[in-house]
Amino acid sequence: SDDGINWTDIGKGTTKTFKKILFDGKRFITFGSDGTTLGASIMTSPNGLTWTEGSAPLHQLNSVAFGNGVYTSIGRASQCRGAIFTSQDLIKWTYVNPITSSTFNSVTYGNNQFVAVGFLGSIISSPDGISWTVRNSGITETLSYINYVNGLFIALSRSSDIVLSSSDAKAWTVSRTGQKQKLHSVTYGNNQFVCVGDKSTIVTSPDAVTWTARASNLP
Image 1 (cartoon, rainbow, N blue to C red):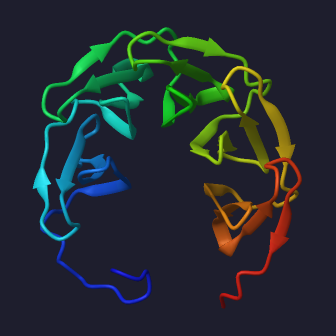
Image 2: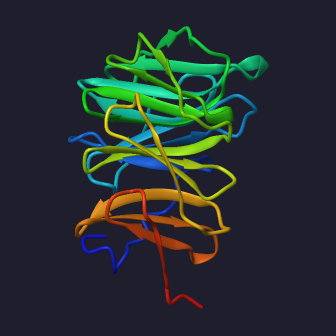
Image 3: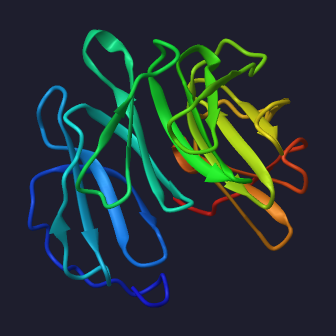
């Protein structure tokens, strides 16, 4: 779509399940599962119409982030250990020995660093995707998503209304939306943060601390 309203179906071309998509400045990258227990899949496209299958680490791939010329992927390896891989071309991947056994669900890049979140409130950060530091989230609930928007890292809980925010990934502020539904994603625009979740849940905030529920007007 060119306008976000009118969409063109380009056909599936694959039976693989993709979780997320990102743009690295040159191409679209989507990633997910190849259908096996511990298998990952990556596809790339310069225009969103023609897609080429890339090489992915042979582990459960939950998220990929791009920054400073490096792709960092996170997920799960065997024995439920957290897995981290880095690449400069999406073809050759280098395994990074994780500093924790936690499974990571989401990774983003901002403020000159990668930040990943996961099981039991685990947060780690790295300037290069290779050397990682454990950060204290202040919570024990599993985090399912993180994004860097408007100068803040925003992380979302997998099972509650908790939202974490930080400018440096070191000190985190815990806030609550007051909603019962799980939140899946957050972005920023028009001077406000916006989170969306299950059952058409939408909440907004001017500072990522005080949240207001909004009507989606969906049936």
